[in-house]
Image 1 (cartoon, helix red, strand yellow):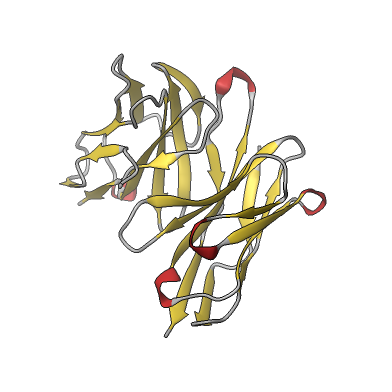
Image 2 (cartoon, rainbow over the protein chains, first blue to last red):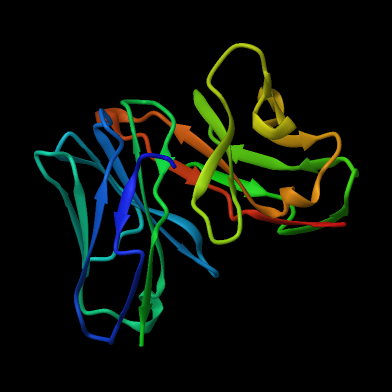
Length: 111
Length: 116
């Protein structure tokens, strides 16, 4: 158990819909990272937050957005979903400049 | 931007064979290096990491890796693999840039299958 909690574990939805994935970091970790894992693209960095502020953006689509709340949990919002958005979405957390600890992921299936 | 290359996408070995998985990165500055493992249906777990000091790093489950700065490499090794080592292995690099951004860049992974 890494201490990083992600919900939901599985999600099935239709094209055009919007979903929200939630992540609770390890106690004390201020940084939260979101990654997308798919068979063809591998692990892609989406976005990083540190203590509520966005710190880095990777290959995140404009249809996707994220935020980190004062209690440090984070949400990743995916809208206007397409078939190609089906993937495993991982959240990770770390202390400042430390190693990343990953959650178990949220598996999104878009039909 | 930095990138990470893992040379082998699929590796099949027999139990007790020795393992070496290649990893090269492209970045000329200071980096931290990691190997993560993902067992089937599970999340990524840290195998080992290099931040500074001794370039030969020992991790969990008998794994080790050697950082060779001149070759921009961080290869993963294990002298004798077990069936339970069947998993996906990811090499990752962390580059410290301005503003505190420090996400990991991952390689595409190596799928390791150990045959009994």
